[in-house]
Image 1: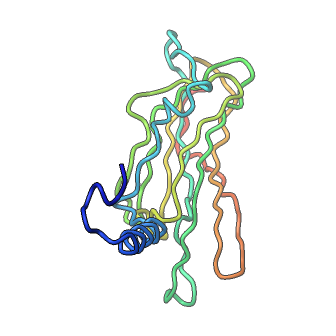
Image 2: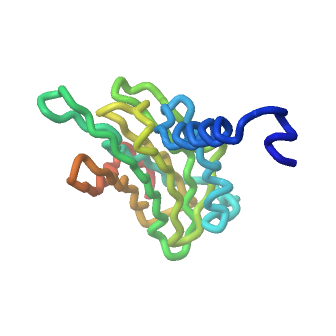
Image 3: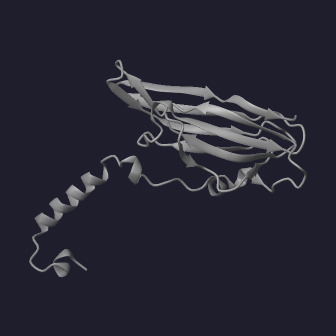
Length: 187
């Protein structure tokens, strides 16, 4: 069906200009409150997951990971916004690692988003990730993640890191923030 059939008498040039304007609007950045959320970790990383252990979870811990999604510059007058990928690696070659919580917190310590609906178990040597887009400024300059983990018995401590990537003017930046243990029970 042609454009003329949809709206009789509509000049083709007006339609072309309207479509061009809509195309330009699509290129504008989307505010964080309107940004589409990524598929759940359980769906995105199904190949990295296994069944939860049936044995009691006798070892557990938590990691705090700074997430520099926004950085103050020029004595606080400017802000650079970056994308952040949190990676949680099971460093055990033989045992599953249970992830109980992946929480994203803002500068004031308020929970912004919880990335898990229920605990998941990572296969040995597998990884899951959570992603913060550069347009998502909800965390502010003091954003961070807290990752709670557990295992059935002794296990290699997980590796938890945040990779920050972004550009400001002609400069391109990438750096890693390593998670720091904030709680550990059992081995």
